[in-house]
Image 1 (cartoon, rainbow, N blue to C red):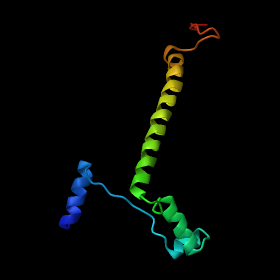
Image 2: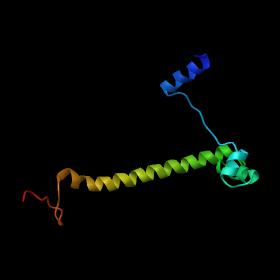
Image 3: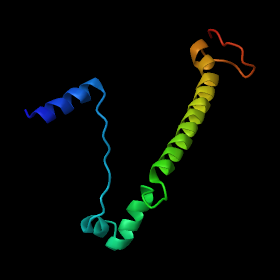
Image 4: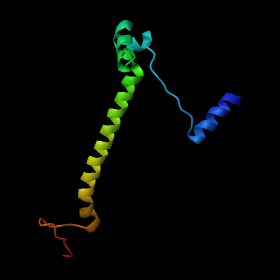
Length: 103
């Protein structure tokens, strides 16, 4: 195996290998999207915020917002499942919330 490939696999195993993939507008992709190449380029560059004055700053802002929504949704899920957990954990309950035992 080539040294660079070995280094990449080693870093992947360690979890320290960072990379990014992106869409490069091609005629074939534009055709698949039923768009002209110019329209498709505009779409791809806009989706990646490459048309922004400072694309890195724009993407960092999006990441902060996404992280906030992620924390918010995890909290909602925790509240929803936390509210249901006692019912599942302690067995069936009647309409008043009292445990139903035996038949």
